[in-house]
Amino acid sequence: MAVPTVTASLDATTYAPGDQMLLTVAYADTDSQTLTLTIVVTDDRGNQSAPVIVPTVIDPLTVAVTDDSGRTWTRVSDTGTVAVFRAVA
Image 1 (cartoon, rainbow, N blue to C red):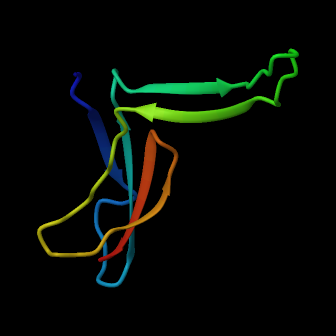
Image 2: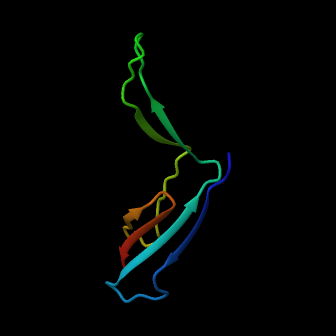
Image 3: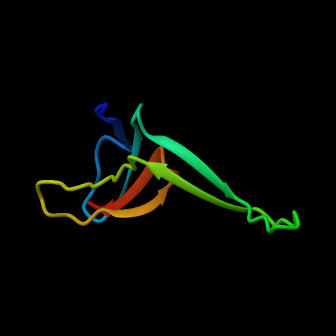
């Protein structure tokens, strides 16, 4: 299994107490796979159901953010490759 990769950046280099901090995390895993299953049921007469599509990810990733001050980082968004977190300085 491949090791996930990650890069991260903050929206500023310095903050005043009480400022909002935004952290953007880009992440990937080369062996993560997206799989789409399509299921159709057919009876003896050849009648078919409408297809049902089930998306899934094999080897999903989870992003966690902590810092040494005990600050709480809240996930604002996550596309599956880029996550944005918010905290207060």
